[in-house]
Length: 96
Image 1 (cartoon, one colour):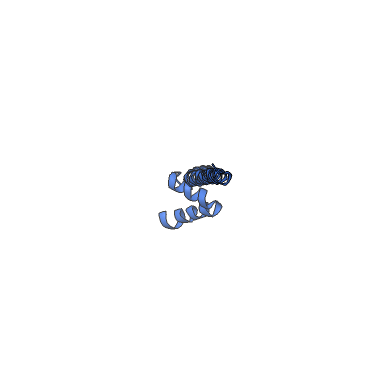
Image 2: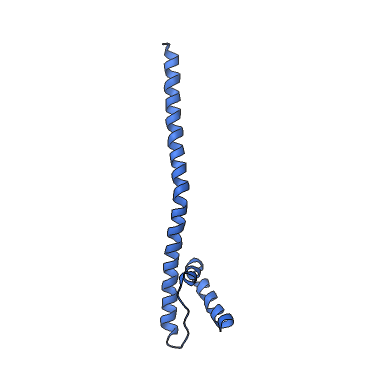
């Protein structure tokens, strides 16, 4: 076998390994993105629930509470303090 032919097949094997590694990394990134999004939503929902719990704890003394459910927790967690203010305004002006 000529020397240049051996180099060519070794080079093809190396390229195949590099392509395979890049492909594995890309597939892993695509699969991990939704998991990160789910964990971020759960984390933000918990933070929102805590903020609503604090609001209900303080507002309970004056008779103002907001129900804590997955929707209100995610609104408060996703939007932060503006989300809590939005829920308060919704409760005051729309829900009565």
